[in-house]
Image 1 (tube, one colour):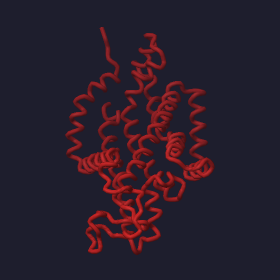
Image 2: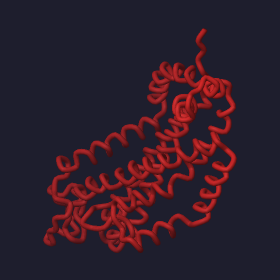
Image 3: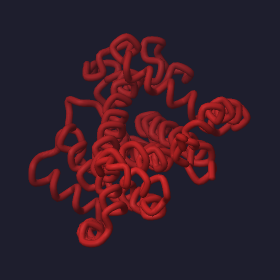
Amino acid sequence: MTTTSPGEERVAKRAPGLRRAGRELLRNPPAVFGAVVLTVFVLVALFAPLIAPHNPRQQNLGDRFTPPVWDKAGDARYLLGTDQLGRDILSRLVYGSRVALAVGVFGTGLALLIGVTLGLCAGYFGGRVDAIVTRITEVIISIPSSILYITILGVFGPSLWLLILVMGLFGWITSARVVRGEVLSLRNREYVEASIGLGQRTAQVLIKHVLPNVLGSIIVVGTLKVASMIILEASLSFLGFGVQPPAVTWGQMLSDGRRFITSSWWLATLPGLAISLLTLSLLFLGNWLRDNFDPRTYD
């Protein structure tokens, strides 16, 4: 007689659950907004060379401070206007989405890889392993993250991949704590003990029986983490410690435009709106994922 573990039963429940979640997505306007906006930003980032009307780094001082096209002084060549060097704002926003999403996705991916691994080990093995992971977590939490990032980037020099590496290496705390808490409640379940009794290796038990039961929480944490990393990248770029020119970032555009906020409002307002729209879409989508894919909703 074969038996199925609660983890396998839960996966089976999720098949029709995915269809139900899809219907619920359509009934949730904020989640629909988040999905649509996020899809648009991803497509814009992927096809930036085809979408951008101009070279984002090309300067034309004769067209500097051109307002958006709907303004009476606007120019049809520059739909969202130009900056203090005559560079096209729309093109810079399009290319800036690439940096924002790259930092958010790759930084979150590295953070989840570290956090989920440590959380699984700490929760499953307990004892000394749990104590070591907990102490490391407490040390990192005790250091203000902004000061930590600025110090490292200031010493080694800011760059895109260093920024992603630093964010990933020090951004895993939340995922590790969430996974550890979930695993602590799962490690003594009957199906886990049965798997151990049948001679399955520890890695097999963790991957086949424990990890699927915390996957919902990982997805939710990851979605929200992408939003926080995008904001962090914009903040560091605003302060001059993020990705450096000639790369285009929204935080860099905000920093350049704040000096002209009273005379050329679009320089800072438009990249600020882009950051707000992208992060809001991720937050709305993350809240919906939490409501529909958190494993506890299937208990």
